[in-house]
Picture 1: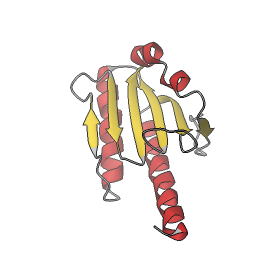
Picture 2: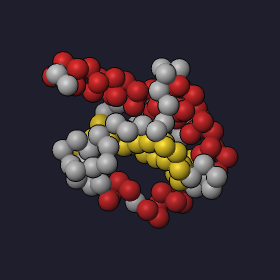
Picture 3: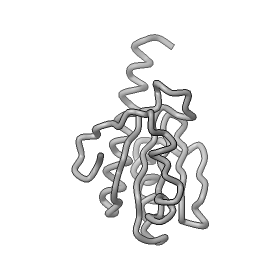
Length: 128
């Protein structure tokens, strides 16, 4: 992969991450945090973490993100938690979206686990 194609892929992943955040906000997700994991030995380049007040809202947020990214021809490589709706994980390989029920997020403290990661500014109101 050339430097140009890597930067294009990074720009594309950053753009898709922003689209995912916009879709989550449209469904009233709260406490959105984008983490840059590239400097760490992470499982992906980025995490997008958000909260929902109910299991129904968590499903609606995950569905909205999946639909928005599908408009760009991007499907998740793997999905977990859709049945329980307490922690829905959408794995897009370059980035992973975590949609938490508020209480589940408080329990797992994923941001603390990845505390060495840099927070990204997505330029959207309602994001950290």
